[in-house]
Image 1 (cartoon, rainbow, N blue to C red):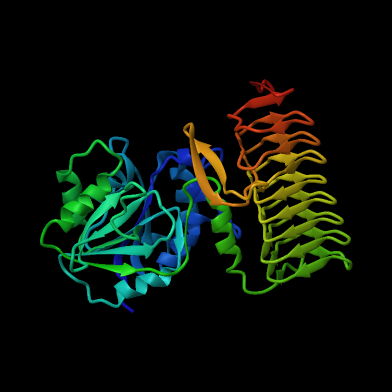
Image 2: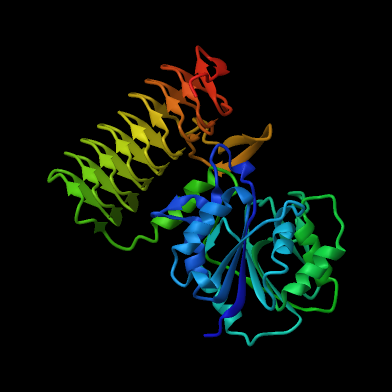
Length: 424
């Protein structure tokens, strides 16, 4: 099988829409960050991999790459501050690679066998190949526009919901026979909107370059907003093909492990606890007596206290629970819940749950969504969190509170009043 000369991973975003979570490309699934999962897959299809990163994550990503096999075929580049967005990430790589390239987003996970279609072609010249996926629900992104002969002529970025040019959404799996095709187009385009890369592609499509597109029908998960963690978690858990229990794990004889489950080193599962797959429990975690974990991802060094239930949720590292219900939720590292605190995750009217970003309400398209809790936040005993609410980093929710609205970082909520958390 021929390999594509270069794979360029765009990882320069600052993850602002991912609040209260941090570092999309470093989010762990099955014991590895997304960026590592992606690099390992791309090595099957590309000779050389270049990762353009935000300066905040350059050191940690560099160390991750150094620990991979054949790391000499991988280079990490910091995105230049004078360049913004995807176009800026591409321009930052201009002097570091040449020739054919496949460009991808670092926070996307899909069936990488899609790339086989490109590697089976002889190395073409003056060629662009884009990827689309048919979408029934509205997607806030780029759509393919075709002419009367169904030739691809334009990418329409974020069209109005009642003015869609087609039902084909553009996915960022973009092939260029030479990097200079896109860098020259980027340099020639002027725009004040956040669509520099898309306008550069349209510039190429308006010319004489040979173009084609693939229709992709497999799964596709992208971390844009924090609730997308749950969708990606589901896809990752479905990759577990068997029951894998580390030899150092201690499982009570009365505990029940059902389905495809990974249980890490030194995990302890107590009396009458139950883990229903697909599920993952990371190293050194404790699943205490009478607890239930189902369709969930639990990180390392966690305590799932007695009588807790974790359903369809992502639990980070060093998270502590005690007699809690956590449903369809995300809890970041070092967060905790006191006894009796619960997440509500379903509207009684059956409507999908909304969440907010930048003071705009966004339909998550999920009929079940609990809470998103940032790192190091603490939820007091017997508190209730309303569906879709996000709680920032380093927050404290006093006992018995009902959390109805998002809490900014470092907030202390007591008697329904928001104060500054003075304890950090």
